[in-house]
Each structure stands twice: as structure tokens, then as C-alpha cells.
Image 1: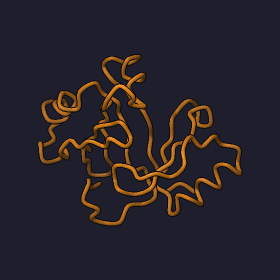
Image 2: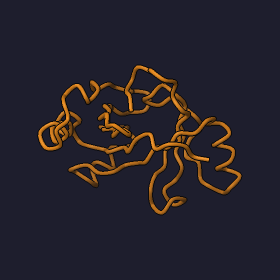
Image 3: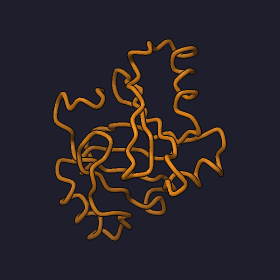
Length: 145
């Protein structure tokens, strides 16, 4: 069973440019957005926009082999990439998804929040890429919601 919505992933060509509307248009403070960090093992750069009830993850391709490079090429201004829900146990969630016939795109790996994640193919969820992440511990240091 999925838990709370953790974040919406937005793929962008430039995280620094994508941060500006949240400050200039929507009234957030620069301190509401985390510093941009690299995650070379996943081929992305990321930053979190912290909102009162959730987060927006801004993700930018890191290198030519980035898994989101083609997405950004097809959507040059960026766009919604995925929706992330928390689960209590990522391995139980993976096994349940497979048992129900869903296409799990990866084995659990550590995501931007420092907890294991998996992705479920968009064909299983009305065209939406779903990320499942093990619920992060409180004060996990990357971002807050």
C-alpha cells in the first residue's frame, strides 16, 4: 500500500533557471529550495523545492548517459517526470508490484533522500512514471517536507 505523496519530479534543462519561478512568481524564499547536488551514480543533478505539504524535485541531466537526457530533449522547457509515493518497505513493495504484474524498472537503489527507491513503468499507471521510496527517517538531511 502506498503512503504519502513525497514529491513530484520535474525534469528540467537547468535547475538554477527552474528555481527562479518558485521565488519570483510563487513567493518562496531561496531558503525553501535546497542546494543543487550531483548524483553521478544515477546521472542526475537535483534540488528540492520544499512546500508545506510535499516537495518538488527538480532534476537535470548529468552527462550524456543520463536517463533523463532524452526526456529533456523531447521536452526542452522541462516537464513532469514522475510522482513519488512513500512505502514502508521497498523490498516488500517491489515484490508486491511484481506479483500484481507491474513492470518494476530497477532493483532498489539509493535515491536523493538517501533511502531505497524503485520505479514502476508508466504503462502500469495511466502513463505516469511512479517512484516508490522507502519512507525516509525524520531529519534525514537532504530535504524536508
